[in-house]
View 1 (cartoon, rainbow, N blue to C red):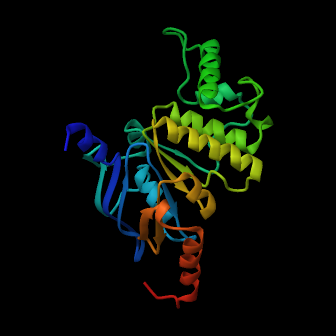
View 2: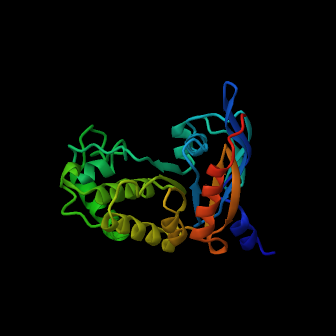
View 3: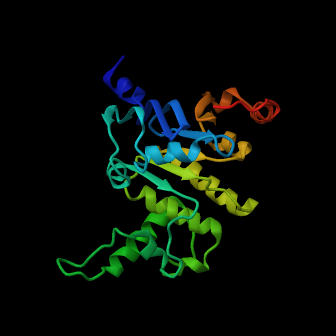
Length: 259
């Protein structure tokens, strides 16, 4: 194998045997997860399956009780959210962390504001130009970068939050239910954006979703989480909407077991 092949085979993010409990309750148990460069992995599962806890571990919010995490082939201990971000791990949560009263371009540079020289003055002109260039490059359309975020649609807000994360040099982007509560038109906008990012090959993604049809449409692999463990890990090309639905229905047919 050539050196370039070996690098391509190295996961950008890898979890091995990661576990996390809260008191006597295991939220995540012995989870192994691999994200390769330019890959989109779906993380699906019922409410309470452990998705939120797993994401908080990956983002440095929770410390695992056991197991290892590697970024780019190097084992790390994610000490905090800011540490995870410094390694290129960004998350877009459902609340988007946007400030409605601020303009698009101010939100794009939130906590990363461009300043004029050594003085604490905002370089609004530079931020406007860069925000406009970023959004055009990604195919995100808004009335103007000076428009208040409060006046935008849900899909446009989601797109801005994703664009902000990508242009903060994200290597791994975690999208927490990016299509939740969106109509068909708004959802299509975000799916197109995800496809565009996938084609560019600049960022890997973990997509948390409940809509299996959308998952099969844009993701390379699917990981199904059940009771804190990975129950299924396979290419989306090797499964179907019918199988995924049957797997989840089967779970409800089973008698609940005490942990």
